Amino acid sequence: MREQFLCQHVPEPPPGVNTNLPPVTEAKPQTNRDRMLEHVTNPSCATCHNLIDPIGLGLERFDAIGARREKFQLLFSTGRGGGNRQAPPKTLDLDIDSTGHVAGLPNSQFQSPLQLGKVLAESPQCQQCVVKQYFRYTAGRMETPADRPLIRAVLEEFRRSKFRFKELIVSLIRSREFPNLREGAHVASNYETR
Image 1 (tube, rainbow, N blue to C red):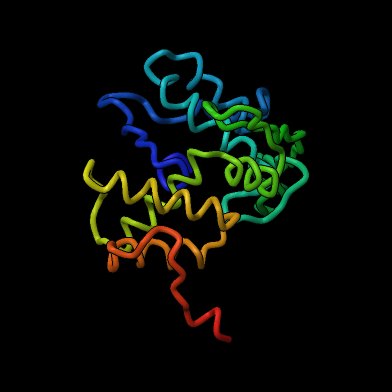
Image 2: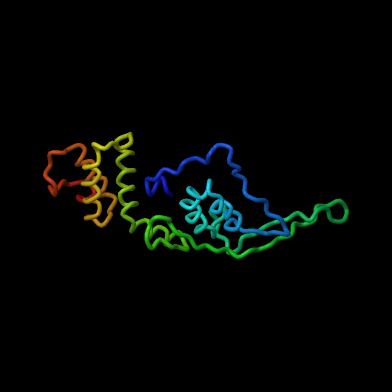
């Protein structure tokens, strides 16, 4: 999210840091939110985890493969049953707190992917990042300081179009391939003639 939608680099964990979360036991059942608390209380982890954890925790209603869940389910082995059979696991269902936010963005609280999408769509940082990412894709390279005026101009056209992606494509191609066209000059495109 930080890197692809906000164009921010999140560094790797420092060398030698234990990246394992505390184990979950039947005596101390915990959700992912509970287990991640150490990341924000440990100063060597908090700098980055304060940026990334609140986003992920806001998506806790979805498991590792994207299936929706209403409860955080923990399974604990109960050992062998009668006749050398494995006894069925004990299940504990914990409530999920799916509140999240995007640190650094004002009014960024969310509780669903739809709300997160709205937060990002309204963020000037995300809007600029979309333009940068498309520039990177079409140019086959990272932007340089010399590309800033081009990116600013394309971003303004993207905003004026009310964020129509087709307009972003046309604007970037026109700006890169035909830089001498006057700003605001109309270029017909295939999708307009259909």
